[in-house]
Length: 100
Image (tube, rainbow, N blue to C red; front, side):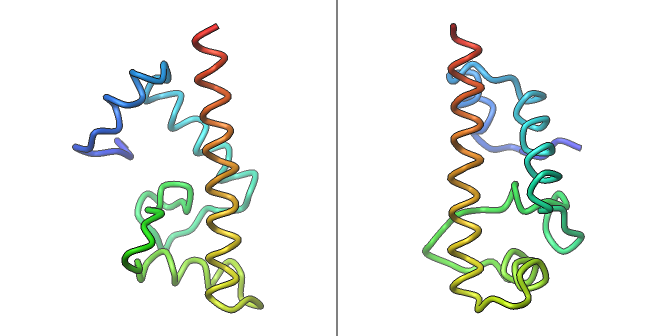
């Protein structure tokens, strides 16, 4: 599975020094570690979901409600954005290691 489609992802990954395969590996590991696998969302993982603030994604939000049933959606989104930041840090660390 491509898990990136026809987006600018590969161009930016190349610039960062991360292969698309490494990118997927990192996201898959993160997804397993954080229990972010979900049949509800595209590519079966919240780690691939969009972080846009300007619109809601009913698939992502439904998955968050399933993953965090005791939280209000706003609190689940806060958790989501916090973990997405953590994922970005893992990706950046991988890029730094690749460049050294």
